[in-house]
Length: 267
Image (cartoon, rainbow, N blue to C red; front, top):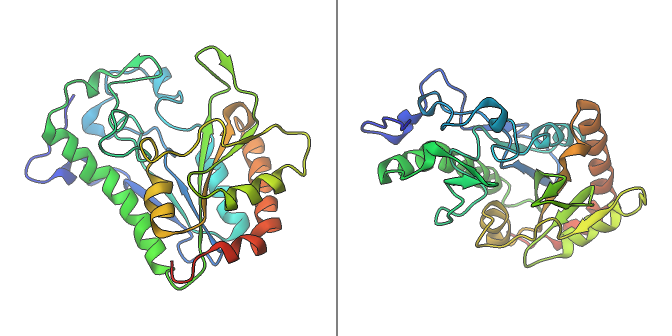
């Protein structure tokens, strides 16, 4: 089902539907800004389910299960501002460049997405304007408001325990792009607990061709930035999400004084 955008793309969402972006604790005093690109599996009413059943929409192809719960709890621990996406990555992926085939995926994880097939240009622009731009606009404005403060950027994701039949052993991963320094400090702090297998740029490295949030808002601004990936079986329950949020908060506090000098003056 395609959205009838009419004269304005914003009509993808009706007036009583939730916002495409949620800003939590905007005035938070922490030095770190948090983002959660795949926070929800919600669908705009006018798109129906994109041809998928409820079971599929609960899977990783539609969002990052548990990531928003961890992000909210981490924001509370650190008194940090947090920006969360409001709709499913299947409608438009807020962590993919707009020219990527995965921006509005016709298939994901081997699952066909009928509602994304042969999408007209107007429909694509509709989704960009209604969902992608508001989310990244909120991150950009938040970072602009902190331009005179040393600021670090951390995005929170989750990943599947296996991919293409291969087990993924890491309990948590710290991923980075061109600048490893902030990630290296987080890796060292997390490694103090030998109970966990920690991925160094695993399960995914950050690449400009694939990722958007860290390259566009972190690296482009010269902000120390990293992406946290937590294995989904580690955060299936609220109690487990709370435990990982506390571990991440502890790790961040341990390295904050070392990380802040990485912030470029005026970035």
